[in-house]
Image (cartoon, rainbow, N blue to C red):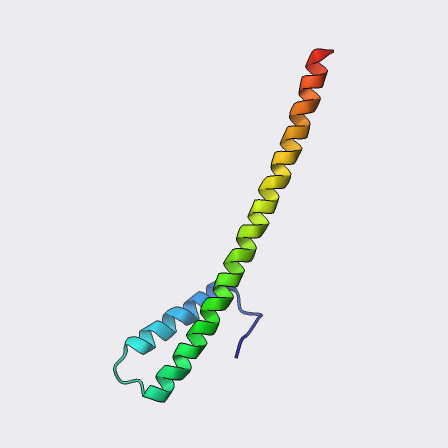
Length: 81
Protein backbone atom coordinates (compact mmCIF):
# COMPACT_ATOMS: atom_id res chain seq x y z
CA UNK A 1 0.00 0.00 0.00
CA UNK A 2 1.73 3.16 -1.21
CA UNK A 3 0.72 6.51 0.22
CA UNK A 4 1.80 9.20 -2.25
CA UNK A 5 0.92 11.91 0.26
CA UNK A 6 3.76 10.78 2.55
CA UNK A 7 6.71 13.13 2.60
CA UNK A 8 10.23 11.86 1.96
CA UNK A 9 11.00 12.26 5.66
CA UNK A 10 7.91 10.27 6.67
CA UNK A 11 8.83 7.47 4.27
CA UNK A 12 12.38 7.38 5.67
CA UNK A 13 11.06 7.19 9.25
CA UNK A 14 8.77 4.33 8.28
CA UNK A 15 11.67 2.57 6.57
CA UNK A 16 13.79 2.93 9.71
CA UNK A 17 10.92 1.51 11.76
CA UNK A 18 10.64 -1.47 9.41
CA UNK A 19 14.37 -2.17 9.66
CA UNK A 20 14.15 -2.11 13.46
CA UNK A 21 11.19 -4.51 13.40
CA UNK A 22 12.98 -6.86 11.01
CA UNK A 23 16.01 -6.88 13.32
CA UNK A 24 13.72 -8.12 16.09
CA UNK A 25 13.85 -11.90 16.29
CA UNK A 26 10.23 -12.07 17.50
CA UNK A 27 8.75 -11.12 14.12
CA UNK A 28 6.92 -13.96 12.36
CA UNK A 29 7.91 -15.06 8.87
CA UNK A 30 4.66 -13.76 7.39
CA UNK A 31 5.06 -10.39 9.08
CA UNK A 32 8.70 -10.25 7.99
CA UNK A 33 7.67 -10.79 4.38
CA UNK A 34 5.00 -8.08 4.62
CA UNK A 35 7.46 -5.66 6.22
CA UNK A 36 10.10 -6.46 3.60
CA UNK A 37 7.62 -5.84 0.78
CA UNK A 38 6.52 -2.52 2.32
CA UNK A 39 10.17 -1.56 2.82
CA UNK A 40 10.97 -2.26 -0.83
CA UNK A 41 8.03 -0.10 -1.92
CA UNK A 42 9.12 2.72 0.36
CA UNK A 43 12.70 2.40 -0.83
CA UNK A 44 11.63 2.67 -4.47
CA UNK A 45 9.47 5.72 -3.67
CA UNK A 46 12.34 7.40 -1.80
CA UNK A 47 14.68 6.67 -4.70
CA UNK A 48 12.21 8.20 -7.16
CA UNK A 49 11.79 11.27 -4.94
CA UNK A 50 15.57 11.74 -4.75
CA UNK A 51 15.99 11.34 -8.51
CA UNK A 52 13.24 13.91 -9.14
CA UNK A 53 14.87 16.33 -6.70
CA UNK A 54 18.27 15.85 -8.35
CA UNK A 55 16.73 16.46 -11.78
CA UNK A 56 15.06 19.63 -10.56
CA UNK A 57 18.30 20.92 -9.00
CA UNK A 58 20.19 20.21 -12.24
CA UNK A 59 17.53 22.07 -14.24
CA UNK A 60 17.71 25.04 -11.89
CA UNK A 61 21.50 25.08 -12.11
CA UNK A 62 21.32 24.94 -15.91
CA UNK A 63 18.87 27.84 -15.96
CA UNK A 64 21.13 29.80 -13.64
CA UNK A 65 24.14 29.11 -15.88
CA UNK A 66 22.21 30.26 -18.97
CA UNK A 67 21.08 33.43 -17.21
CA UNK A 68 24.63 34.01 -15.97
CA UNK A 69 26.00 33.57 -19.51
CA UNK A 70 23.44 36.04 -20.88
CA UNK A 71 24.37 38.55 -18.17
CA UNK A 72 28.08 38.10 -18.97
CA UNK A 73 27.39 38.72 -22.66
CA UNK A 74 25.49 41.92 -21.85
CA UNK A 75 28.35 43.14 -19.68
CA UNK A 76 30.94 42.30 -22.35
CA UNK A 77 28.90 44.04 -25.04
CA UNK A 78 28.45 47.09 -22.79
CA UNK A 79 32.21 47.20 -22.05
CA UNK A 80 33.00 47.20 -25.78
CA UNK A 81 30.92 50.35 -26.35
